[in-house]
Length: 327
Image (cartoon, rainbow, N blue to C red; front, top):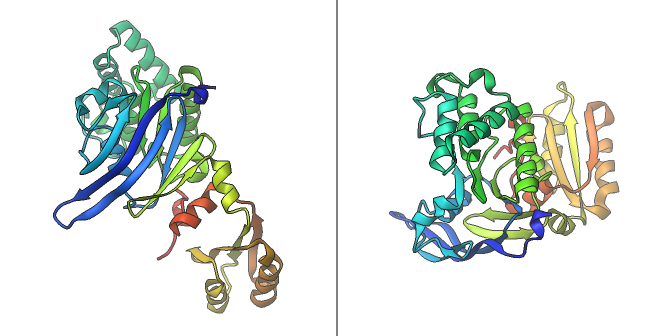
């Protein structure tokens, strides 16, 4: 397995970034290591400091204090070395948008050192894997937003780099494309030993590929470990999902909202987390007081990475727009 390689791709020590004016601490004293060859997930709510952290790791912004080592190289002192080892995909699409899709990918692969013949082969494989051959000769600016993001993502995958940093790689992509992204990243990691760092809100999908996870909230590293280790920390709790019928009156919603550990995901949909020993009481409360006739669905769910996310951040990690936490 690639993740068995002992060396570290990244070692981050006591990293702090303060934005001026205002003195906003985007990151504060973050320390973590990422093993060479592993798929590492970085989770956290909006504004948690995830993008700031990976931009520092990519040498795009400089920390106020702390140390970043990339395969033994000092990123803070020598940020110009990072592009030789890292391909970074950000949330903004800036370069080469006036070119055709095939040209964007080909130029990127050649700039990363591939001979033209090899670059053409890599581009053809990427276009086929992601089923984008039909738009390969269209200008990027004339594509839909989702197609532009796909093209930018594929550009980050073109060319040989031992490390990929991908910030929200599946944002704005439909479910079928998201699945292809996860399958490709898994295959690349397994076949080439590529270190992959994923920043994502889609914790349920990412859970299928990540080997270790760090959760950042308020600029702080609040949890780190394998999915199994982190799930074990919430194993003493159960998660109950309750969906009310559309005709249910507001009193039922008010009752559900008042339960300890209740989160309103949207109108009529609630998630309640409770200690395992309270599961029976919770069931009786919902069925007895809300009433079985008011329930469209009611289920007990085993712990997932989303439960871990909820525990440490208090917000939902779901990328499903229907399941955004209502503040």
